[in-house]
Amino acid sequence: MGRSQNAFIKKQKAEQKRKKKLAKKEKMDARKTEDSSGKLEDMMAFVDEYGNITTDPDKEATRVTVEKHKRNVSQRRKID
Image (cartoon, rainbow, N blue to C red; front, side, top):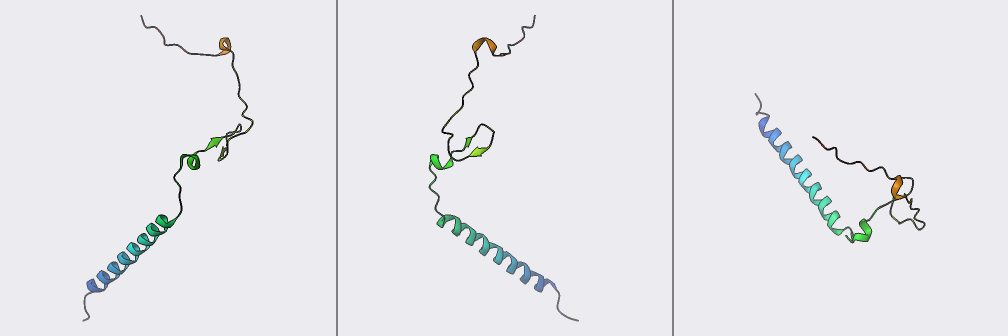
């Protein structure tokens, strides 16, 4: 009868674990070498008038003005 498969399976698992750890380390090193400024201006996002997210601010910002008496403001109900 041959040897148990336990030793073979252990070696396979150890090899898979080593490969996974190596791949993870390579990814981490790649992220570290990647140039990221981390500035607030680079992280800013703007929403245009159609609701799409863009990286540059809208030059012609269209503002909608609502008159004070046309606003619908809800108030709390008074419970007696």
